[in-house]
Length: 119
Length: 239
Image (cartoon, rainbow over all chains, first blue to last red; front, side, top):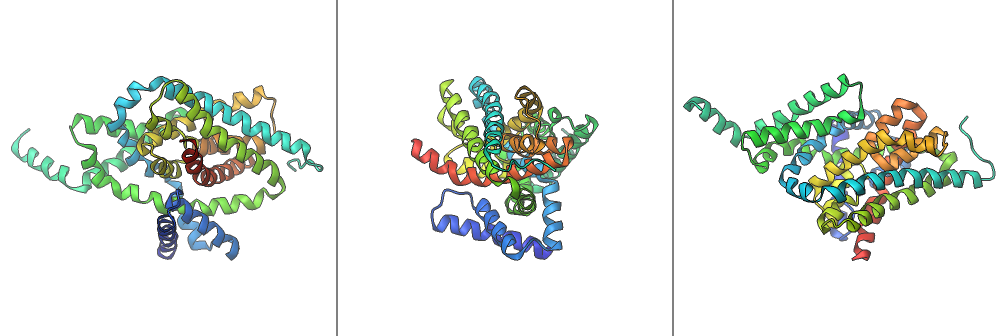
């Protein structure tokens, strides 16, 4: 667990440093995730240690949003002022995303010569 | 308050112990309620925990900054957890090689629709600039979405809440949308839920089938990475 946690922090640190050094607009931890992903491709998968540590961390992922989410209390006036655009935007955009994603995939699958169906 | 109780409160409000402890307590209470509801997406544990904490902090007249001094130990783990998302992404990607083209096309179309339609509709209805920017990453998994919001001039904590509401909307509405489209393929249904409503939609997809869940998890990871790369460039170009 200690070695896996160290690996995760090293990848995060590399992501943060490179994002800042090259002035990339991408968040550092996301860059770290991409680096780890490439490392997994090269290594042919995570070891048992990294596997179980990341599983443990991700199992309670939603707990980690709570402190930031509670910060909404500072912005409650904004939500109260702009609830209508927020609500319409969330509902319409979420439904549109579902329809567009599924529609495009179905279209692509029909146009593939050997239409791969689920076994 | 009696003097000793007052002393205790002075100690607690100055130490990180209280903020950390109430975060864990509120989340566990919320998770218990979520399980009791049969994992109903409407009883989202993060949303319930946030409501409990906001009520507690308001009633005790505690400043958010004071609370965060303790809660930051939990918050810090978001970084390594984001990096750890590479592990399930790697595992799910191996399973879907046969559907590479539909997956990539759906991802690109869905990712752009999610961000651009949210910003356009909010702008149309007169939302302020920071709110529009907070909405843009709403379909991306929370840790990545908050990072993006910070980078493009949104409000990360508002984004966190918008992301959760988006997840709930997708988890509740997806089935009706797909049935209306007469779409049955569990791979496509799962992938579209993952693009539109990240982890909350993914949890819902796993309840339906293992295959739908795996595609949803893959979509969540890919959409997070793609949006983080594309959205800052798109927003820069738009303004």
